[in-house]
Amino acid sequence: MIDFSNKTYIAAKIADRADADFVHRAGGRMSFMMDILAADGVNGNAPVDLEALLSADDFNFAHDAYGISGHMDRETGKLMNHFRPRYARDYKKPKKLPQPNRP
Image (cartoon, rainbow, N blue to C red; front, top):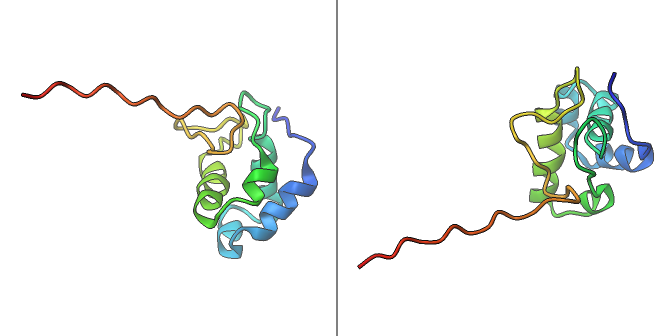
């Protein structure tokens, strides 16, 4: 059974901001909102700062909102393919790898 966070109001605002064509392709407004709520700190996913996502610039908003919907396993509620929202609360930027010494 999939769990959902209780932040329905902010998920509705995110759905309002998202492109209508994308929301339609994602299965409709309710399905899109359920994806957002299933990704927010339940089902083995890290919590997402939904308020920050809503106020993000267009590029980062699109990455997270559309990425969540596109990578959601709708049977388990887990994000697949190692997708990690940028506004996940425990997101850590990857460390830079040391560069080899070149003569």
